[in-house]
Length: 113
Length: 113
Image (cartoon, rainbow over all chains, first blue to last red; front, side, top):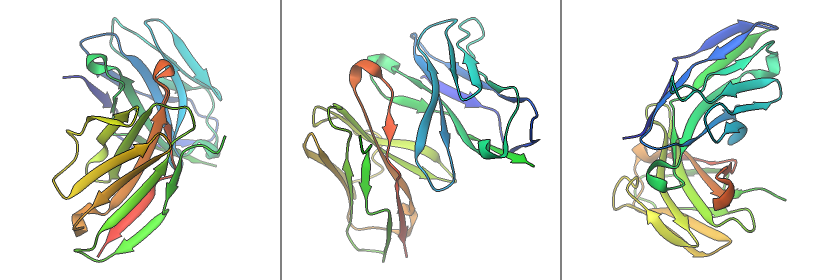
C-alpha cells in the first residue's frame, strides 16, 4: 500500500544553517504531497504542498519539489532560525481516490542559537 | 475563521470511565478526520467522515472506541471504557474536498490513570 518514509530525527542545527529533511513515498497513483509542522503543544499546520510532478511548494523560506522520478519530496530551507524548532511531517493524500492522508513518522528539528 | 475547535484541551480520567472528545470543524468543510498521536505509534488516522457519514473506520482500535457526527458542525469521539493505553493526544481535522488540505485542531491531551 501507499507509504511515506522520513529521515530519522532529531536533527540539530545551528542558527542560519542549511536544512534538508528527506521524504520519499510509495504510491500507486498520483497523490498530492504535503509538509506539515507541529510546534510544541500545538496541532499540525500546513507548511506547503504540491499537487503534481515538478511542482514546487514554498512558504516561510521552506521549499519542497515533487519529484516523481525519485518519488521524493525533500524539505529544504536555506537559513534556519531558532523559531523553526518543531516536528515536521511529510504526508501524501489520495490513496485509492480517497482524501485520507498517509503521514510519515515526523522529524524533530532543534535549532540552536 | 476560528479554525477547528476541540474540547476539552486536557482530560484526566480513571481507567474504566467514559471519555467524550468533541470537535467543531471549520464551517463549510465536508470532511472530518479523527487522529491519535503517541510517541510509540506516531500519528494514526482513526476514522473520517464525509458529509456527516463515516467513510472509513478501519483505524478505530477496538469496539471501545466510537465516533459520531450528528450534523455538519459537530463530531464526538467516545471511549468506553477507557484504559491507560488510550492515553494520547487526539486531533480532529477538517477539509473541503476540492482543496484536499486538512486543517487541524489544537488537540485533546488525554491521560487515563
